[in-house]
Length: 201
Length: 220
Figure (cartoon, each protein chain N blue to C red):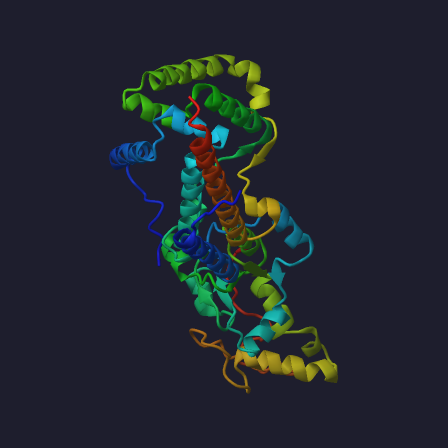
């Protein structure tokens, strides 16, 4: 069976498909309640674990889907692009993004969704993203060496742990389910707390 | 303070997801798939250094005689070279077609892929490409030249006074793969192997020398 994915689309077809997928992504982020900064930052108070549930759930669904489609020969995994690892800049970037998430209440994708639903803070956040992109681009010559430090190539977890992709997928699935259980427990405790002492304003 | 969490429906869903992941782990260990478990450069080097990236001609001959089904033998030479002579059970996928969709379709992902050509150059590179795409792949040590030297015209069959011990075994192998007086070639090989005379102390006139097979050109 010849792999049909990844689809080999011409630019004329690819762009509309990408835009349609972008709208779908935004739509489902909105339906998950991710256009609300209160909902999103609830994660950092361990009050509302929707972010972890939706994102980790999406990772597991995509991971198992890719695995099974690849084994069925529908998908050619070797043609799927794997972003390269640059350890130190990605660590710094991840921390910076997390700090921005806590402070601003959004991550880049959700800020677009918030802005699209007419939320003013989302709009400001979006403006901040573009200002940040401009700043980063201007400072790139200074950061160039750092941005390329810790290069590991297209590194994957099976390579790091010297095991098969299936075993890694199983481990990640188990970790996701364990985190969902913790989330349920934490949310139940919060509901109980709020029932007893009233919701914090 | 006791906390009641009703998880019946969720527990079922979680169990189903975990089962899907466990099945994936089990199946992906048994079946290689392009891109799923690509060998890292370190693993490839490790296989090279420990000589686990190739199979010896005599070992392959043993696999063929044992009618093993867990390998797929691929001849990556040109079709005319394959038609001239090929190792029994081999199928022909020329190197230029191996990584096209049609070529990939012919590869059996559940088996160890053994590639061979005339020598070691192209097959070794092909073996590398296949392992880095997630196949379990080996190359035949020294290619069809090594096959010729070790299986078809082994040392013990050459010379004036062949050693009796290795002679019978080597002669049997040779006859197996070249036709001769033994049984026809093992496996479902496409096309018959050229029938060559068994080595005699004095070459008979009018027959081709058994030491020369047209093995094709170049280092393929």
